Image (cartoon, rainbow, N blue to C red; front, side, top):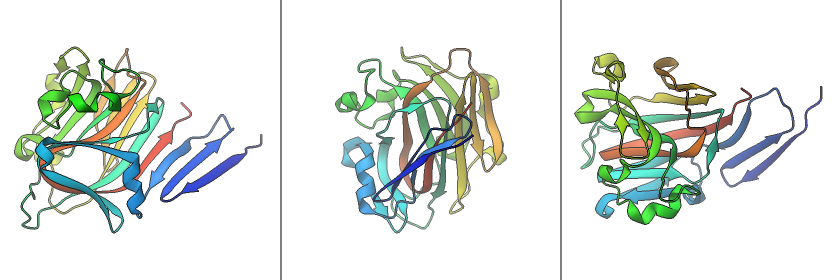
Length: 234
């Protein structure tokens, strides 16, 4: 079997297209090594209370209130999203080791064709996102005391099962330490993986198979490195 691959470099963007039917394909990858990378992200920051910048090979999110940073490209399952994050605790005004959160396969019922069209209806305040249709993990939320998985149904339901409400220190955050996150959506399986260990493994018979990804946090300073989207074969 032969394979033809086309590779297109656009600034720090790496797009790879393959005609092979039996391999995973990296469809997006960045090391945040160019300021133009910000063009691929959309910010919703509560009360303009902070900044999102590209600096020395990382995406820097430094906010005093709530913020969501959306990747502009719609994603389709089966897909794997990977990134590394560092929660900064160096005495800065927003340094707070908490809330390495994320939405994925997210859509807004008010504008299902593109979640960004309704951006003006979301201020960055967390309550504005409760009506999304999405998967959500609050990792180290509630001042780094809880890690939770919720499935939002697009009607205000944000379902939390007891087994998805974790408070053991092994599921919480450490300051200034890199942590690798992987988000997998594959047929009826949804997984949240930290440093190679599966934290949440969900069987969803009505899997959300398309949508957007967004970093979510509140009153926090974090760095994001090595963001990658992989289209899975199965």
